[in-house]
Image (cartoon, rainbow, N blue to C red; front, side):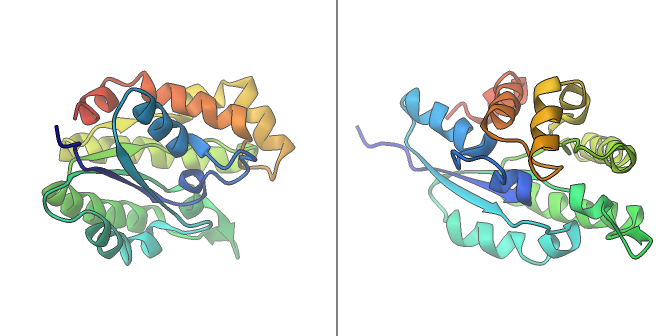
Length: 201
């Protein structure tokens, strides 16, 4: 029996990258590790770039995914980004809300025509003021995904109430947890019905 050629691209910024995790697995590596342990043969592409905004992501995501997901394979794309859009620089956010939403609409509307797509929401950080903006953008992304009929997982709500996640983020660089925090996030995604459907190869 010929093994299935399963390829998954995880596209986004530092939380996709797994920044802060001293095991270098992050949540994306842990998800694919579990898939491999159940017997799936998965090629896993981590396309996370630290500090990247939705504007920068808009300019690169399709070429990077197209090169890694050729015709004939079982291809999947998971997006997670937006926190960097809400970062204050020179008195304003790096990307204004309207532009964040337009960038995301363009990315997702094209992606869903090419690949099965999921979107994992924005994670909280150890900055109460920025978390207000992160939560607001997460809500807008949820509405956008509902309109586009793309599954969206709100991770801000459970992780903002997680002592583990918040403590690890504060103990690190103020934004990113270590291995235990990413493990908790991976468990949230593994409990998500849409993830089970998405990975029913």
